[in-house]
Each structure stands twice: as C-alpha cells, then as structure tokens.
Length: 414
Ligand SMILES: [Zn+2]
Image 1 (tube, rainbow, N blue to C red):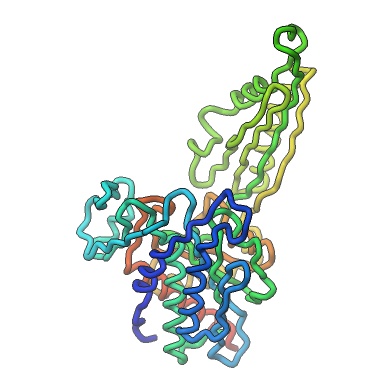
Image 2: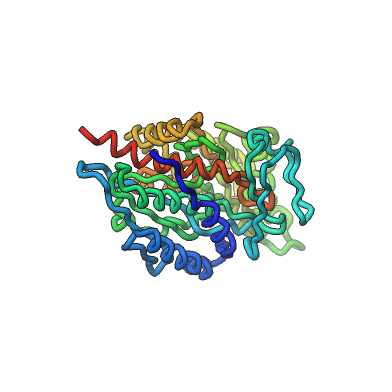
C-alpha cells in the first residue's frame, strides 16, 4: 500500500473551531443545536471526498457509505465517532496550538496551564513528534474530533486508491455521546453495518473491548414526621437514617477514589430529602455480573440492618440497569476484536487490549446487536484543559483504519 497523503491534521484543526459542547440539562435532541453546524460541515466534506449519499438526519446524525472495491462478499463495516465535546470544560473559541518537534519536558500553555510529564508518562514516547494542545483556556476536543478527522482521512485515502481491497464501509458521526445519549436516536437498522468500531480511545495501539457492568441502586427511606416540639418518642428522621447508611459504607475500599483497573465500586452520588423521605442514588460498577450483584446484595444487607434498628422506618430498595460489559457480547464473535488487533500490529504498533472504567456508545450498540469495540485516536487527557494529541499518532490511527477494512476483505476472500 502506498504512503498516505494525510489530511487528518487540517481536518482536525478545522473541526476544533466548532463549539459542539453537549449539555446534561437539555431534554432536546441533539442536546445543543450548535452541534448541527459541525454536522452540516461534515456532510459537505464527505460529499467532497466522494461519498455521494452523505447526509444529516433530523437528529443530527451524519451518515455516508463508501462502496466496496471487491466482488466477494465482505461484512459491512461501520466506523463511528462523536461530534460533541464534554460539558465539563468549555469548548468555545478553541485555539489549537501545535508544538513542533517536542523536545521533552513539561508543556506550559499560554493560559498558565502546564501539562506535566509526571502526570503524563506517555509524553516520554513523544520526543520528536508534533503535539497539539489548546491554549489552556478550553479543552482541545481531540475527544472525539480526532476520531472524525482520522476516519475521514482514511476514507479520503481509500477513495484515492480504489486498488485497495475493502467491502462496503458505513460511516456515522453521532451527537451527544458525552451526555450518554449518543445512541438515543441512532437508527441501527438504517445504518445496516454488520460490525462497527468507534474510533474514540486514547493511547496509541489500544483496542478496548471491555466496559463496566453498571447499575444504579435507588434507596428511598421513609421516616415519621412530627412537629419537632412534640416529637419525643414519635419522630423518625429519614435524613439521619440516610446519613447512617452512608456512614456504614467502607471507608478505604470499594469507592471510585480508592479503586483502579479491574476493581469495581459503589458510589453514592446523589442524596435528596427531608425528615419524611430521603432518597440516595448509588452507582454500582464491576466488570463481572457476579461482582455487580455481590455489591448490590451488600448494600441491601446494610439497609436491612439499619431498618432492624428503626422498626418504624420503611425503605424501598430498587436496582435500575444502566449497561453491561460489552465483552460478554464481543466474545461471541472474537474476530471483531482480533481483526482490530491485527490492524494495529500491521501498522507496526504493539497492540494493547484495554478495559474502559465506564460505558461507551459502543457498549450500547453491542447490546443492540451491532458489535462495536473501540480503537485509539492518539489523544490524551480527555475532558480537560490539558488535553493533547500527537500528529504522528493520529496518522497511525488512520493507517490502522485502512488496514482494518482491508483485513476484513482479505479474511472473507476464499
Ligand atoms: Zn469520546
């Protein structure tokens, strides 16, 4: 395969100038109308690249098709990235700064923000590379505009080189991933891919095939409210019972702030109430279903003990399912992840399988029948003013995408 005449940098620098921050508070879809401005520009770019059916639907999803260059039957492969940026940090008026030929050391941005090598050991592998950051007043938006730029660059290369064998490729750019609603109006049937990949990971070489199993436990404690002046022997204060419950959670383990890697946690994150009723919402996370259920049983046990001390209080214990580890689905067709690993290796990079301590749109799609592992973009420090990405790693990601569609075609050739 010939050398790629990359367009990902110029595309990326263009996309980050669009403010596409999504919103947690909005009930409309997309959550912010401004995302559609970038969506419209992306449609234009896809048409320019030569994907004739490129279009944005009423919800802001951008889709397009690159027809196959081979005669034999190959599964239709979807490539997915998201256009929104995190509500955590401003994405307005992003000024990308290119640090050419990085010499090592901390990177001081003009706003005073410093990207420290101590906190970014991955910088040690970037000596001599060209790094992109913001000016430190906003996030950069590599999450996930780098993914869009890389997919589009790969498409551009494939159109310019019809001799590269591949099956039909479907592309989707989705809104509202950062607020957990990226698949809300995604029409899987119309997308019509057999397998897909999100290009939304971080470090070079990573392929992610595992997410948490996630539930929310909702506990509603009901006490007895009486005028406090005449409450002796009558009042049962649900606020105090809730505080007692929280106090009995382990202090040195089982929390997001004390766990890492494959450890799960319970995380009380919302508490709301008054003397009469208090509601506690607890996020429960684990990589296995057994671990998830054990944690839930443990919470229920703490609650039962508490109630036994306060016979006149009542409580309701409810489990709401959020999402499941996508590995359970992906393991049914291991080749989907294997080919991604092969594509990374073929680009001369050491593949790294990684777990995601969270959920992804890919996990949701995988459970809706479209297996969708996640591939690196080359970005780091997502959702922060210290976000950075290397141009050379972006180009490697493009190479991986090109390799990937080619590998699918090779594997299905008899
Ligand atoms: Zn992302």
